[in-house]
Image (tube, rainbow, N blue to C red; front, top):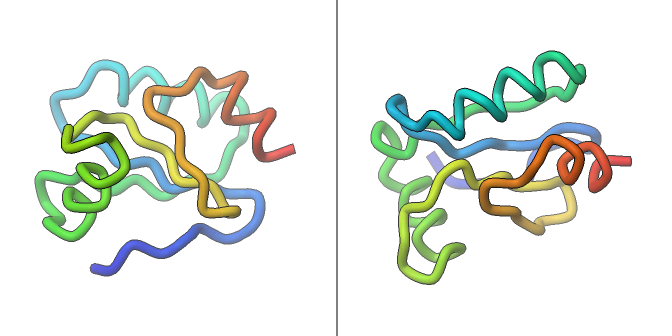
Length: 85
């Protein structure tokens, strides 16, 4: 599926099933009421390519895509909420 920017007020989080940092950020976003779409890059090759392109050739997760098209790699919940404000 092609990578598109998320709607205003939401984020897209690229993850893997085994990533502890991803699980932590997902739980924090759920508690904070941040709406997000989660995409497992191991199940979606186009998303994996996006993550690699975003992270200098590395499949680093979590990578978060914001509505303005910017990204953050392994951001804190504070950074996510601040960038959505």
